[in-house]
Image 1 (cartoon, rainbow, N blue to C red):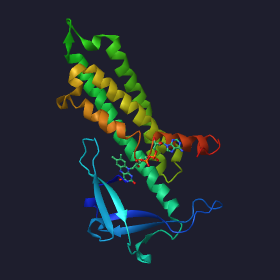
Image 2: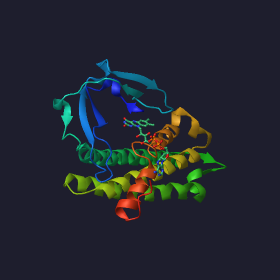
Image 3: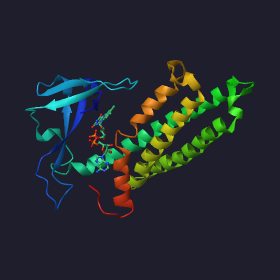
Image 4: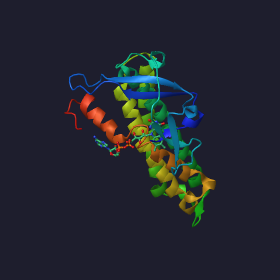
Length: 234
Ligand SMILES: Cc1cc2nc3c(=O)[nH]c(=O)nc-3n(C[C@H](O)[C@H](O)[C@H](O)COP(=O)(O)OP(=O)(O)OC[C@H]3O[C@@H](n4cnc5c(N)ncnc54)[C@H](O)[C@@H]3O)c2cc1C
């Protein structure tokens, strides 16, 4: 479900269980396959899924029945795909965090511009702390989230373990970015709901980052278990 842009993909990364789940080797039994031209294959059915996002990409339910793959299509090793997949998940989280950070900082910029321009009862609304402080706080939170994002990217570039930083960056940029967008909407009053002022679209895009590509609950599960050493909760 929700496979983005598959109708334009030259190649699809297919994650498949190829051996029964074995509790003594929970990371084994999954193989990655590269499937060329997925939209052209008879064995692959694409059904468009509507989502409430101002997006350039379409989403699809992908049903696969009777797809033939060969050894040449295997990425990595048979039954050893999860290790490779984890490497790609960290980069996806770092890239997602950078994107959420950009959205959040853009919301702050737009809120500042509007707060300086809009005069109500003879003074710019940005002169009131009820408007100014939330924007300033969002700026501070996003600046801190940016440091974690940069740290994750640097560790990944250096080939170091970066799971904790990549997950933390994704969590913090989504929470702080979304909050900044919400505050930007509030700053814009009624104009916050019009397409002309952009902030509502930023909010809708940032809302997705709490759920995809990984939900914030699953990030907290990861941190609780792998970083803090608490029992697996699911
Ligand atoms: C617009 C969009 C684009 C997407 N693009 C892609 C794509 O290109 N490729 C792709 O593979 N996927 C894609 N996804 C899917 C996305 O990664 C999943 O929707 C997301 O990871 C959540 O999984 P789920 O929908 O199965 O939710 P579920 O697993 O059903 O979870 C539902 C809710 O319960 C919570 N929950 C579940 N289990 C636990 C637990 N153990 N502890 C605490 N909370 C829990 C979740 O965090 C979530 O809030 C996309 C989704 C959307 C909306």
